[in-house]
Image (tube, rainbow, N blue to C red; front, side):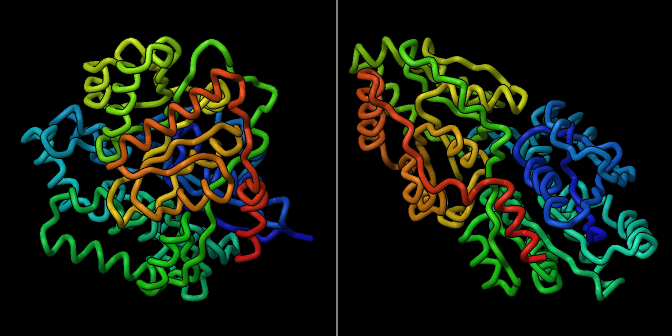
Length: 428
């Protein structure tokens, strides 16, 4: 039986690193098992914030790739201000850390490049793909954002080919994402963002969300929205790796940590524990694997935690998974505001697969809290908690010290990449 074709329009594809690339890389890996042939459309010359060549091993053999060139203004932005390189990963300085150059760059980014700086790829992609879809008899496409400009490619193609089946996949929200209010938008720019988002919601056959709350919010905004979370690939997790029990009680953060998700109350709690508890101070290690904002790192290094930090920088995905296994507690953070309660950071699922206990920060009643309760994998706190955080960490430390900090997560099979791909094909 001939496989059905699906064109996946994505900016992030190996050798891009980070969590954004893995969602559709893993779907593409397992789609053929369910009768679908994925075809990838991606830029020929992208400007990725992170690279990870090891992810190439997950690219299906002989997968069909379609590429066209893209023009992006990031080189110009970085000449204006070196910190603008953060824009490529959706990050920037906030509050007291903003210089006048940062403020100007953020204003330009928000008002001149709507919805984002990859918008120059939209028109040429619509023109190219209209012919490609017809010539190759493809009637189903996926657009994955951010960058949300890729949804405008889907919108343009849907307008030209009304019978096209279009799935708009929102790995993060558009106007409801936490940093949106920091973009210094004019009223007309804000209106344009919202009009474009609404057009995507109204015209896409299916809008995919990665969290339960986002799906509910998208439905309220008029989208035919369904939640398929991110997940973990069982082939990535090596349970034979044993943590380094007895060497150090290790709390690890894996991934990118920017200023808007900085758990200052955690650093305060750890600082107090190091000062108050001699045993804890002797055995504790704070490990970072990924890209940590310089200003966050500087602040921690100016505290009692300075001699407890191990900063490994960005590691290939497989090595990062090993570091999860070699930890005792795993840290995950979300934006603190109420509107972000639906964000489920992708790394939580690999955290779950590791079997380690998870320490989470974010808004109350967050979807992450629901997952942690269901899997008994850790505890979620608000950014106002300090004493309860100290108590939680100390309880885990005592269990570790006595050799009783066990792996006890449950009900995580629902989040395997293969099961999630099965859900996707049922929707298709």
